Image (cartoon, rainbow, N blue to C red):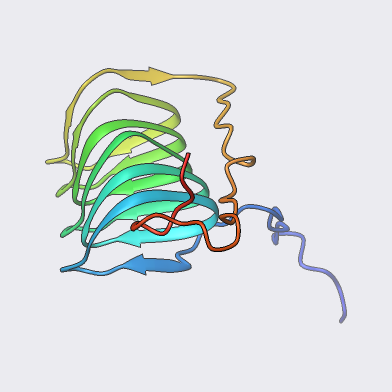
Length: 148
């Protein structure tokens, strides 16, 4: 009567596979996204992404980044730059211009990739120490980040 269902598998803690922040359509942002969580980009983003979690580039999203680093990346929009991820999925509307380094890779019919695909057994993302650091009190530039 109170038997545990043996078909259920426990979820692995520490994996964030959901969207916690959204950059909406019509919004443009230049800067750096880092830390833990999931982000969905429907607008235009230019800068650096190093995220322990999920990055979704929606159909209206456009990302220009030297190298997007995240555990899971789903592309339904456009990415100009490389991608390093444990899992990469390019949807039928997705377009990627850049080299990708992945542990797992999937595409739908109609997806576009111009670049090289490198698959690795043990992929090091090095995103856990990329947490954004607060600026020294009162010292920020116009973008809101601390001067170098």
